[in-house]
Length: 168
Image (tube, rainbow, N blue to C red; front, side, top):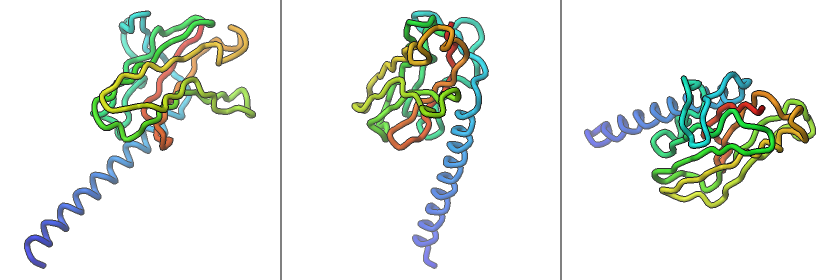
């Protein structure tokens, strides 16, 4: 093997190793996204964090680290009949043009995935404010109240972020 071939082989092995690590990290991240809601990052109407944030909420997936920044949903907790917002800032080539926000409803096997917002026009260097309408969690406050896990997917069904909201 000549020197350039050895160098190319070494670079290829390094790229494959890094890719496998990123895939493993993404898989672990997505597994966490499907776990039950466990707490909230409390925020006010201006998106300021109140108290200690929930370290598991609104982290950016390994696949989008450095490309997307996620601010915690605000306000949180939120009153039934109002909305909360999730801001997603894209600071480069987002690798997707679609963002789908929703939650899994364990109470309704006919509609296990409830879409809360869909953006099909995502572009580089943009800010998307996704809306979470609390009325989509139940026909009345009693049905909607509680802690809910929200998941944001890209157009390839990769988890971008997840977090919990409290409906009161």
